Length: 94
Image 1 (cartoon, rainbow, N blue to C red):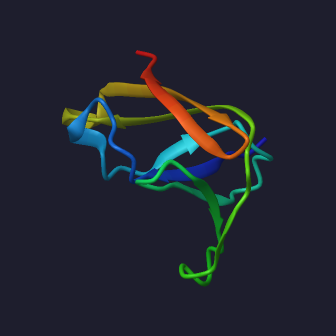
Image 2: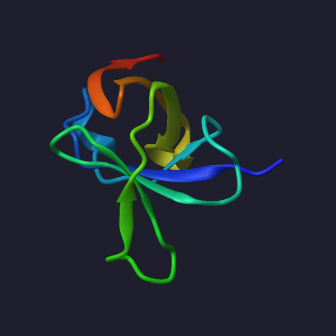
């Protein structure tokens, strides 16, 4: 089973990982690329053409995670709730 990657432009609780690439298993796990925009939309991005992206109107929760710090020893995990394509909130899970 694979995973998908996610970038988050929307402000996260932890500034040190704001620009990190996150992993998620909340979608199809086919190594797709997703973006949460500053405006709270979630887009799927074409890996070959970074300009090609589409709003997926997602409804549900997206759990995403990354590591940071010395030797990538610090775990960061978040849960984002979307309702009919609109971000409602992002909570820190760890």
